[in-house]
Image (cartoon, rainbow, N blue to C red; front, side):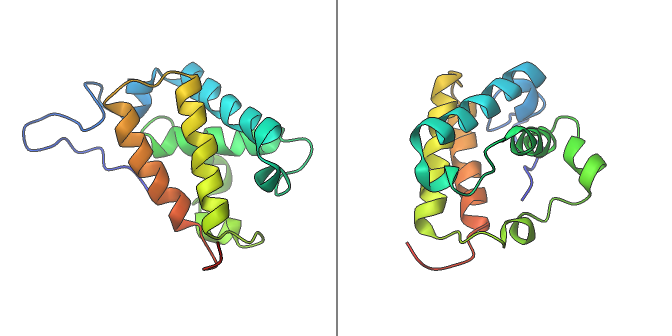
Length: 142
């Protein structure tokens, strides 16, 4: 799942004025803040997702930051380090149904709130991240 970076027919982008969602967000520092807020929410407010992650979540934070960087049109760090993301395959060891996908998107939307992502980027990311959360589901439970 990647973001289409081609402009709309009128030359605009659905995420705002910058060339990529990564730039619209504010680049590396803002993306790191988003990822940290997301994992802080998992740690503090999501027993369901916390149980899927190691106690030391530094590698998880790094993987998500690097994935989102490339996914949002910034440096393709994840692919350079680990190859194609293969999201579904990498998540197969975990049971991911509707409840887990909903909880992931709840935590991510909370992180988007925490870093105050403005419109239209907010609506754009809400939709694309929801698609991504549903994409990694591997069971119909929940």
